[in-house]
Image (cartoon, rainbow, N blue to C red; front, side, top):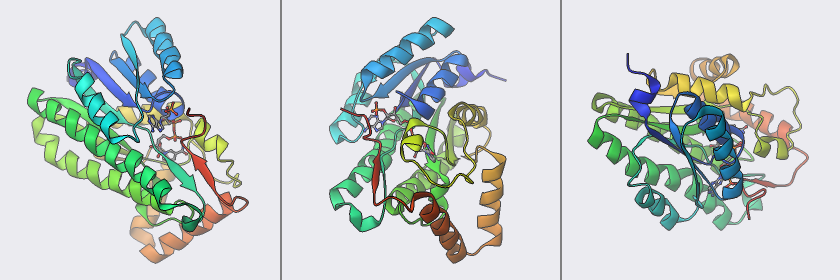
Length: 275
Ligand SMILES: NC(=O)c1ccc[n+]([C@@H]2O[C@H](COP(=O)([O-])OP(=O)(O)OC[C@H]3O[C@@H](n4cnc5c(N)ncnc54)[C@H](OP(=O)(O)O)[C@@H]3O)[C@@H](O)[C@H]2O)c1
């Protein structure tokens, strides 16, 4: 059995790695002996994490400033990392607004498409081509339980996450005989700075820790196409898929979403602290 580093090394690229789940995924890669490129807009935060990872694990790290909402920046990432022997791409970043659909102008919704759809598409295409050529590698996309059905207050975000789920599963099937593993992680509520800042009101929602989600994700790569990174999420998925009709699933998620965010008109995550 090849080790994680033999299959997905020597370098991992984590798009969206200056905090939270992205940081945990970068640390998880380093703990598995991969060198890591950490991409974020707040490159000074990514740089601090990169230095800390290097000091603690001895792997090589590099912080890379890019705005994943910008089309040209995505191509620049692929171009400028051409001389780095990347074996693993993790697309973690997302942009999300929370609130009724018409509280936001269409350009804001399009930014969700830019970061959550165009970003993973362009980077998966660019790095995936290299992985195919070298006959090994891995791609991890981050989706959400919101991707499994329509969901009020995050209507467009949920649709973008459905794209990631379907894209990753298709790539998994296309690339599995070429030595390239693909995984999509359907995360539930996860205690990241973005999640905490959104101030969800419903304390009954089970919340995962970023470190646990990252470990579940990296351990599942190469074993399956789709991961629900907690037992409660696997049960929810089973119930939605096998017991409820789609209409009931949509209504149940609408109830949960309205309960969590009923005090808010609208909220915008992802640009919280970005300059
Ligand atoms: N947290 C949850 O409850 C939850 C639930 C389900 C699914 N997910 C999924 O898990 C992933 C991470 O979630 P999270 O938002 O909570 O985040 P996180 O991993 O804690 O942080 C998001 C990271 O993405 C970076 N980022 C965001 N927009 C960017 C842009 N335009 N260009 C470059 N980097 C960008 C941020 O860095 P900068 O701000 O420095 O650029 C930050 O490092 C997302 O794909 C999300 O859909 C999260």
